[in-house]
Length: 384
Figure 1 (cartoon, rainbow, N blue to C red):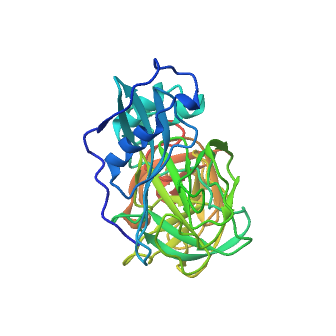
Figure 2: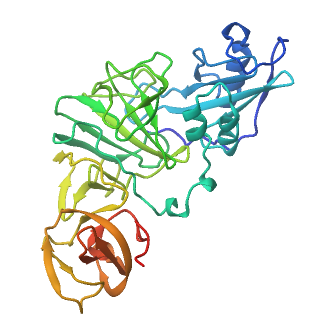
């Protein structure tokens, strides 16, 4: 389902608010001119926007969710944002997720919890260089119970626009769980259907079509926390023809292509058109319609052995093929990396050529060409 991509680089819109008492950072619901705040958000997104301020507004600050609903048809999905607003000289200044000002205002907004100020106020520039866009480590599991196998019902496809940010899954016990710890928000004004979890390292995940979902406004949830059940809910628009979860990936406030990111130790692969694709665990390939076993999250200093053919991988006593073989690893094994160094050059899947070698937690070495980590850089520093 698709809509045109929202253009977020709009100038900030100011909407006059009625006279109010002197601004205060203390939470006083009665002092919040929410009508003018809602009008300011609608001015950003258009008259169809659903704006949910809930109780998160004061005379000076406003915060909530805003959704541009989708048409009730196949191929349409809603667009949604968290927003933060500050009232200055009688004017509401509104910023949406994905805009630089959103982080600036969030970091200062007393209406937000300390966790929210730290997470929502973190800018891309403030994070480490190892979190560049080429670094696809998520630290996430699949959004259901570890050890269960669910059907991979839809390959990479959009949440909106043309970016194939989402996959569909169904089956198991039907309980949709948080892929990683974070701050959870209910997006639709109805409180139904759509939960967003904002994680660390600039990531967020969306879970749509839920039934019996939790209703939250910035609650901290742990990895594996219950969010709702697979369903057909379309409170914010679109269409669903079978109970499932529409699982989407966001980064730095925008949807990103889910291709080549890993969840539950499966690397998502986009092929053909929307809803087509596969998933890789080492050399094991599962096409849409197959089952995905949830192995749990891949740690940020871990990797999955991928020999690009299913053979075993030699462990060596040093970083290069001139060193003795001290053991073997099976394709699909999980390894923990202690540090990395340069050695002999090898070519892995998709013509990935590298001379990087990883020293494992047991002291042996393997070529990074045959270990999927999500980045071609050292994941735990260089060996000294």
